[in-house]
Amino acid sequence: MPRLMAAPTRIEAAGQPPKFIEEYIGRVNSGTEALSIARMRSPAGWREPGQTPEFDEYTVVLAGTLRVATRVQTLDVCAGQAVLVARNEWVQYSSPHAGGADYIAVCLPAFSPRTAHRDP
Image (tube, rainbow, N blue to C red; front, side, top):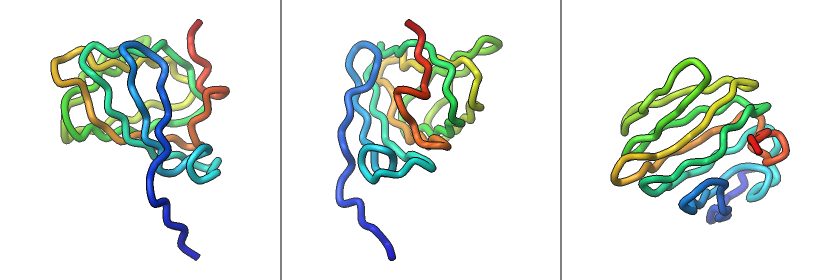
């Protein structure tokens, strides 16, 4: 039977300046552990700590530019583009350009602060 998620749960994200996550499907909003789907709106200048997550992260940028840095490359992912970061790969996300970034992130399995393994 279908389950309506009438609204996302707003979660404060790691990093500075502050960014909020709108989780539609995931551990918090729907009790789903298999995957999470969230909309991110990060302001210009936002940067989060690096992490080595236990989940694959699929990201589609809706507006602006999201910077995705790994140990081997740095990508600027622009509106209309997508990126996949495989689990157990160190990554750091940021939105250094004017206008920030608006994007959808899908994590498989669902995002959890415990399994993100953020840098200290």
